Length: 101
Image (tube, rainbow, N blue to C red; front, top):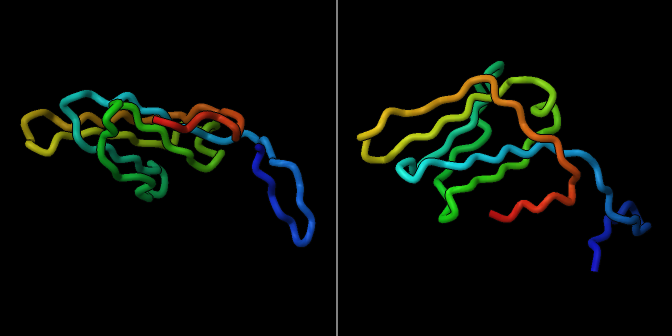
């Protein structure tokens, strides 16, 4: 059954609009992930690796039109060097995109 949006007293059909999605396939030796806006230095996400090693994030749509993201992975033990990629651009998808990990 599809979800519905409520606008005032009216029920509307779901809105299927483009969104930005960042998918990171993490190294098995990395435990943590961070995402930073490289223009404002705002930390957008800090989290741990999922059991599937795949992390999916939904971000504001402007991250799919410019290379504004820094994406980094690091391990808790400090054995491996931190790996940071600059200039990451999100994928633009429809809002019904499968966000399961």
